[in-house]
Length: 348
Image 1 (cartoon, rainbow, N blue to C red):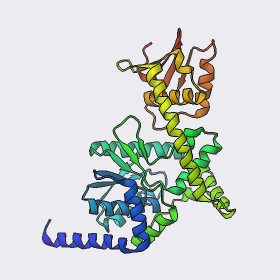
Image 2: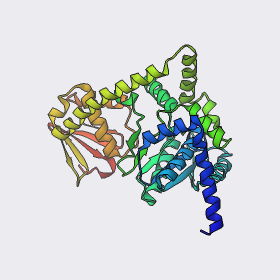
Image 3: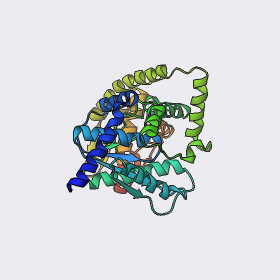
Image 4: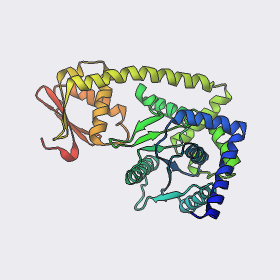
């Protein structure tokens, strides 16, 4: 890099960091830095919405202060006619603050049903593959406090158990890959992220699906707005979720213990053998143990629906049970044991 380009770059970096002198942005950055606490190479998923653009800015500041490399990726789902133009506009906007962003395209036939869920899985897959290519082990997503509340209510409406209610965590694994999904904005509200976008970029993309009431998340979001007007105390809701997370940790301890003591994993055959004692536990422990094993063998990013696992537990308890398929796995009884194997590797 010649001296002229270096001078321009240094000037840009100074301008970027100058925003941190503003009291409100400084406070937000401190929350972000405390949540992240990482000095390794990272990747950031950018959509163009206020949450992901704010995440891109905060991570850029963090990288400059801690001298770490960060890769930025935009996924163009091509589900809307204007999506490709939006992706290019976001890339151009980020370039102004010295962020080089790569666009990842979802090519091929698009679904006509369950669009949001399929698009989410494809987005994760494209991002995970790109992280693997670049030997990146940490991927940052822009989920924030409002997303945490929405997720909690969506799972409550579905009748989810404790694990489902608090499933949006700050640090989760992507399938069985060596990739950590980090959500350092979970303590920040959307209005704080919008403030950053207005101050730094004076721009963000408005996704029309966010106001489309055909989607359950949009209806839940509107319900939350109504509850706020009726006096919903967000701090108390956050406290409730945190208390549930503490209880969840205790249950996870016994789930791991159950799998360790009462099952055997045959690595060569990719099969779990569950003993009779595996099912001599409380319902929640059995439920979670089965869910964890099926998710691992089926290599799914998300666990199978609770209703299906409950039906499986009920089926296993009956003498007539022989075999079912669930979450990409075969579950069958062989004498006094239950075997769980991945469909593609099934050789029984």
